[in-house]
Length: 253
Length: 313
Image 1 (spheres, chains in turn orange, green):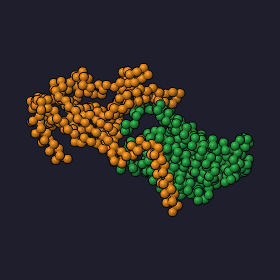
Image 2: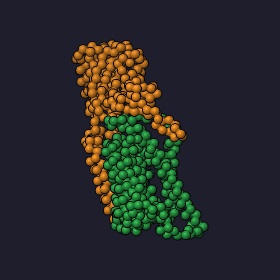
Image 3: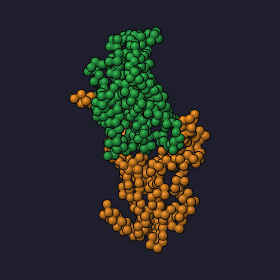
Image 4: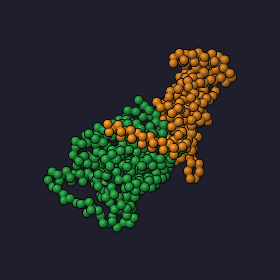
């Protein structure tokens, strides 16, 4: 691993020397994550290099913000209320497109890097996610209570991460950060966006893609259950009948 | 050793799952019950989504009932005709139960329904069983022997007034087919919404309402449970894709081993004491489910993806 890193940084350094205009280059240690039977989450490393045309890394300080956004899905947030002595799901709010994963890593606390309006204009940070809610009356701005609840719930599952991970500036315009994907990460296409800030304003940005998919046996089982549910159910029953029969025969002995 | 369960969409420790199967299997072997009413709440407790817990447990009960029913089949302890009528009722009940389950799942109320069903059914069955077994224990201590009630007297008159009578040779009964149909139906509904086999309702109903001889009661109820839980598994697979075969098989492995040991311990205990212990256990599960409804949860909000995207929540 260390050797791989060393080789990577060497090639990055060479790369940085000959960067194109607005030069920002990033790469991930792995662009395709496979969820297999022993999947416990994944740790990725994002490497990047900033060229002199974007900022002058040697003379001027710069900041890096990395945003990883997972596939969007319709999500319902429900609130329990006490009705007649028991706690029942009562009020709910539908977010038609909430990202299943959202992580922001920065080289310094966001407030020190730039003004909140700057982050708002690029949609960086959970508060600036364009989350709208759907109700009977059409699309509307969500009740902040439900919005923060969504953030809190997903943050507790390690799916939303902000002010948790940091980007480390290595040297000579090179930087790296760790991307933590928990075991319950949603499958689909992820977008990894890197922003370079200097003196509070954006100097360069780029995006690369990352794919998370179920593979092999897990994928086959999931697809089978969802694409031919009747046959899956029948298989489950046959497996149970066979296993039960076997247990009965073995138990007799 | 963690294992990613592709349908439940979470990682669970293999030994934890097998261990849970073994503990529940031990208790079910000891008390001679299916154990679905213990396993489903336990799965929910360790973080399996309630819908997955219920549907997967149906699948496991099918397997557990096959091995039990085989033993009764060898002893000729199954009334196939009675079982078939119970199955027809169970199929109808399971179908409607699964429809209600799917509808409530879309409303976000399925967890509430599961908890309420547990509190109501376990509370009443556990309460009755506890009262009955304590009375038996107290009577035994004071030396009181209750007068024997013959099977014919137990048979209520309203039972005989019902139409569509059928002869069940093995059970030595000539009764209306509507009764077993209705009992089967109720058990089918419970199987679909609670992830249980329903033996805890069916066995007393067979003895006290139908008046079946005890030597065919357990076998026939297991026979019905195989088919009804198999149908329930298919209904849940089609409606909500919540059956996790891998989870079910792992639980079964533990349960098979646990049941062998449990049965040995069970033989050493007296019937009344066993029933009182079982009743206490049922009441404890009922109380835990009830507390979950009554106590203010630490997190009032919950988030669910409405379309399956592979997100694990």
